[in-house]
Image 1 (cartoon, rainbow, N blue to C red):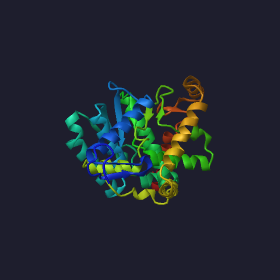
Image 2: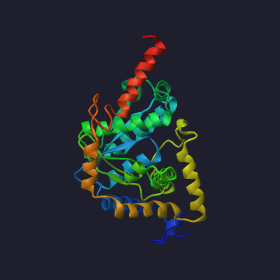
Image 3: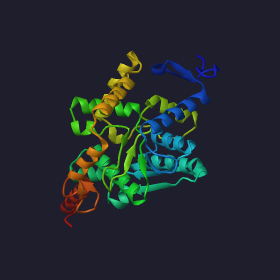
Length: 316
């Protein structure tokens, strides 16, 4: 197998592209895919300040690495969820990358510890509010990432969602006809109202396997195991189904998700009307001031419930 560009020995084959690449050409391919994603979706410019949401996994660390190497001003935020040794190992991977790679670009790593601010680890909080752990985790991370981006005055928040993630999410939303989620599922979500940071997904053109290969070939040390709280997640089931289809018909995930984006671009209302719709339905949370459709945002309601439940349990 030879590299499609330089004809030296290839290290990876990409069936959906009917191509193979050597290490340097594959790295160039990945960088090009991210650059094309940024340009096509008008995600950000070289002068913008970017906050990357990092977890210690391959996708988020690879994204931070790519953005820095492409010349963007990218800092990162790690949210330590307090999941025992898993969270500590994840934070160590992020800190190592920050010290060895990001520091050479002058990039900064911010760390938020759930046990310090929310008062308990994610498992205990989920038990207190009687919600699934993944749901509780998602609420906290969305809130803290948005809060950090706004308070630290970043222009945009970037996450490491790849093609597999977005295709699986789309499959789940279509199976349950989640119209509200479908309307806002895309690689770029504008800051429609004050208090919301613009959110982008620069890896949407790259498959999970391709991002993993980039991390390995570029010697990015990341945590390999899945979060122990993700066992039984529907997203893992949807990914498995799509992987089977991809094996039989390479390019299935790309056609599915990119086809959705093409239709969405034709049918989606103008950005101005979407902003007006959000402004009409959103207002500041009574507790924290972040935008919400209810009197209190989901994060503040959850934390209030946790406080009441903890008081009943302890009698304090």
